[in-house]
Length: 359
Image (cartoon, rainbow, N blue to C red; front, side, top):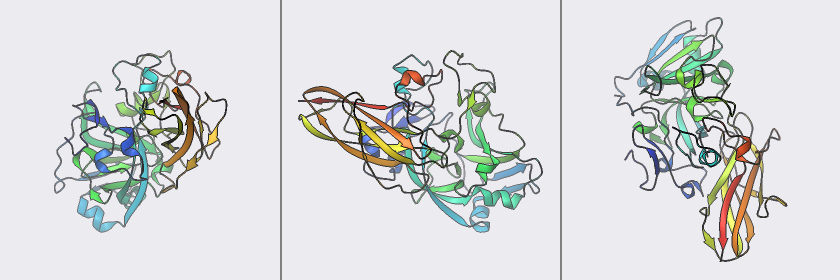
C-alpha cells in the first residue's frame, strides 16, 4: 500500500500513518522512499498534475497563479538533502510514562532523510514581490482533516526570515524520482530544520501574512503544552513548535535482542534542527556512570542527520545501553522522558535507551 515496505508499522490506515522498522534507516545517509515515514492528517488527495495550480497571494505586490510548467520554466531548479522529523517522533517513550489518548505511539523511525528537488521558495516570493508588513509565510495543502472542527485543509506557516532562506524548497521530486501521492505530489514544501508539519504536502496556496497562520494545525495543535494542561487547548496556548530539538536514537541492533556476551556494535542517528548540527554522541552501558564518544559519520548536508556507531561490552543478562547527543549550541538531550512529558506527546528528545541480552 502506498508503495511502502511490507513491514511498516501502520499506526492508522485512514489517514495513512506509518513508520518503518528502525533498522531500515541504518547504513545510509539517504532513506529509501519505500522506508520513508508517512504522517498524514486526512485522506491522500487525488490531484491531477496537469490541472493543478499554486496560488501565491496575501501581502504581495503581484498575486500569482502558477502551474508546474511555470515553476519549472520560470525559476532555477534547486536541490537540497534534508532530514524531516515528525514532532511526535519517539512518542512511545512518553506514553510509557503516562497515557496520551488519541495520539499514535510513534517509535524512533518517524524521521528520514531524502534529496529534494524543486525551486527555492524565496525565488517564488521574489516573483510575487513582498508588500509592506510581511512577517510570515503560510502554506495550505489540499488534504482536508476532520481533526479540526469544522474540517479544514492542513496548513501552517514559518517566519518570513526562514522562508527567505535558500534551503527552503517547493519540491516536485524526492530521491531523484517524482513525488509519490503519499509524499505530496505534485508539489510540497520542504522546510529543513523545522518539524515535519511545516513541510506541507499537496501544496495549493502560499499566503504572505503579517502574523503566523491561524490554521488549526498551527494555532491549536503542534504546540508544546505544560504537563498539567488539558489536551483541548485554546488557540494560541502553549509554545508553537518550529525548530527540531537535538535528538537521537538507536537503529541497530533491535531492542530486546540477544547477543553473545562481549563486544556488541550499536548504531543510530542524531539530528538537530535550525542551523545547529550534531557535534557529539555519547554512549553508556553502565547506567550513565561512564560515557564513551561514538564514532560520527559524515553529514550529507547542513540540514541532514548524522549516523553514529559505538562498541559496548554486554555481559550475560540484560543491559540497558544509553545514548545522548550534543549539538553545536552545546544543547544536550535531557535524561528522562518524565522530564519532557506533555499532553500531546511532542518532542521526546530524552536519552535513547536500548535493551540487550547477553547470552
